[in-house]
Length: 281
Image (tube, rainbow, N blue to C red; front, side, top):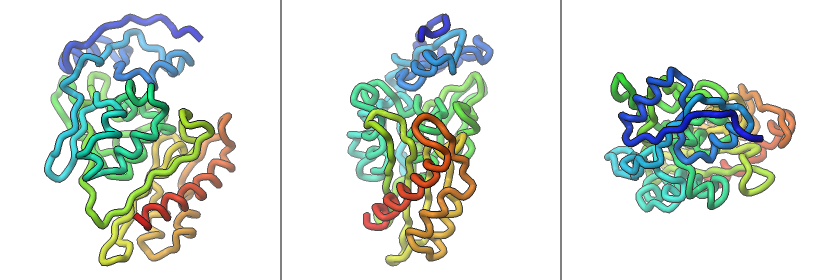
């Protein structure tokens, strides 16, 4: 399908991008890598009056040590995230997940900021950042603000970004050596969106489970935390019982990939695999 007509501009700086967004009055979309937005344009899910291309903002492509966290610039490509040594050392679940996104073409064009600000509940990285308790830095006319991942995703293709704000940085915590992790997804083909995905962090204290964080992909209108499963695991439940609780509070959709009932069953299976991997890590 041919996309609806739109104007096109190139942002020369973050400030220029903010000006373009403000002038568009909510009808301007930012183009980071285009790997999520272009399909949305073709399907007429997105019909902006103007696209503002962020492709020249190289100053937003970085991975830095932020002390207690790792800071990733919003324009950092998935392929770079997947191979970054700093992330591999301190928050390997992020680099591991980036390597699972789409195919090589998508990973070399798509960006971490693009996939998060797109707000697609079927994307891999949002659930991982949510499980990590990450933070997202937005910049707009009113300056910069830090948005917790728990408050960032508000609906299908909707986020807490204001109409004139640009996502400029993603912050993820450095994981302790005692923290096990896993990201497991089920999809029909390697380049497809996940039918279901589960991100797990297991925090240990003296060999016992002190807490857990579980993020779910494609189990509702936003990426979700599986709070019931987290509480069950922290309370001493078995892996099987905790995995069975991941669907509590979820609203798995029905689509061409899976019915709601099948997706719920699949989430429990994938969650058990992810929990077993994280516990063994």
